[in-house]
Length: 56
Image (cartoon, rainbow, N blue to C red; front, side):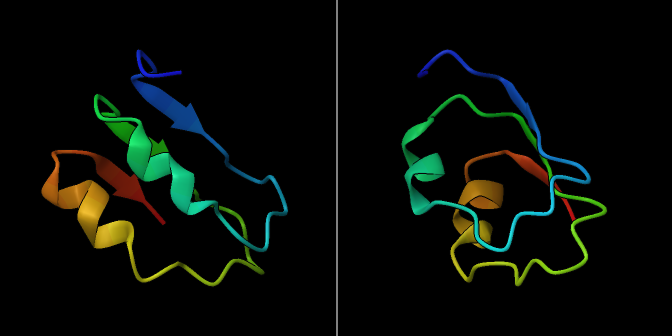
């Protein structure tokens, strides 16, 4: 999954997002909108620092 550019988890009813997403170095976009129960993890800023756009 290292070539994954976009990950759309909208309206997925996820409560947690795995920290292993940090291993996807080329990730450009992560969409977590409409997951009302999700507590955004503190490490999301690391994805953004690597150039990934994170939608909450």
